[in-house]
Amino acid sequence: MGTGHRRGQLGEDLATRLLQAGGWTILGRNWRDGSREIDIVAAHEGILAFVEVKTRGCTDFGDPLEAITPRKRQEVERAAGAWLRSNGSALRPRSGFPSITFGVVRFDAVAVTLRPGRPPEIVHVEDAWRLDDP
Image (cartoon, rainbow, N blue to C red; front, side, top):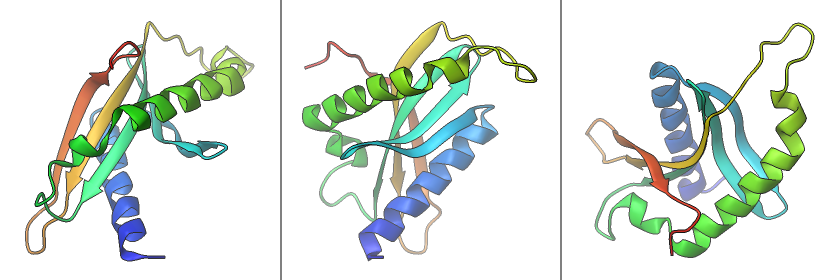
């Protein structure tokens, strides 16, 4: 596993902990639809969020959130559609499981910056983009 992959995994772990500390339930991590991936699928108070996590070791080449390009957003959106088609029945009440109802489905982003000798900087951007964003 390369340095970039390890850094990305650490960023996703930190993002997951941040979300959980905020009361979010993690429904999935690294969910794949072919070559597309959703880093985190999370639920909280009627919100279903598809979360893209970007981790950087510095900001010399820009903020981590700048790496969420229109193409990346489109890939996440398509994967989210596949996740909903695949898991929609799992969200309906079943014996022994509570009902999960979502009034809002949105796309969030988490930026993680890991600088040597400093604590991680983690920023959760709620509703980071919409389907109609260019």
